[in-house]
View 1: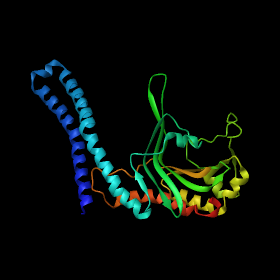
View 2 (view 1 turned 135 degrees about the vertical axis):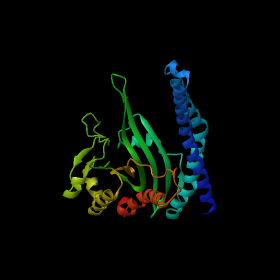
View 3 (view 1 turned 45 degrees about the horizontal axis):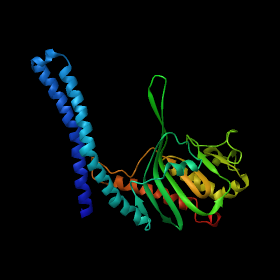
Length: 306
């Protein structure tokens, strides 16, 4: 085990012990309170000692989490990502820049007009670089909407939990083409008659029946949309969607290709209860492949995108 892995393992074990203590100590307090109540006259005093122990346990967990556990967990997460994950990324993408705590601003995603935005937004694990001469950015994205009913009950709906990738092109796309895989929910389609005519998309079909069954296509400029939707691109997109770990949506906006994958997963988080193993390596590689496979599968370095 090299020095870097020894540091990661030491930090992981510390976090694991702290997490166990955070729950085991309050649980022990509760059990001890019950035993003392049963074995003493305090049992005659009613449930007050048990209630006191319960709220004391909640207070202990909150303080322990805020002061001790969260700090050590963040130190472990940052070291794991900036060393272990970053090294693996740069093996495939040498010029990659990785900023674990940074992500796409919500305004950037909103301005694409591709997603409903809800009222909760979080983004992290930002990576940018160049692969096969195609500049890209990617980040984890969480978009949710929290609402309350007439009884005051709160309900949270997840619109998107996965990754968002942006690939640069030297060509401006006038089609405003949006391709949505069946099952990808909460896309902002902008097909309503209440949408400004200059921003309104309309649905259309391609000549590929299999592609039409898998995806819904919307655009503003149908002529350019068919220019972009070559048979090779459609075949590549179908293969990528079949291999993906979530539902896919892509959008051609200005001079960028946006790709959203709703995987409901976060692969770049470090393990707590076991040492980094082959499964963790595979998870990181899957995140790297999510970028490289789209560059290769859609041939984004072709002249059509230049």
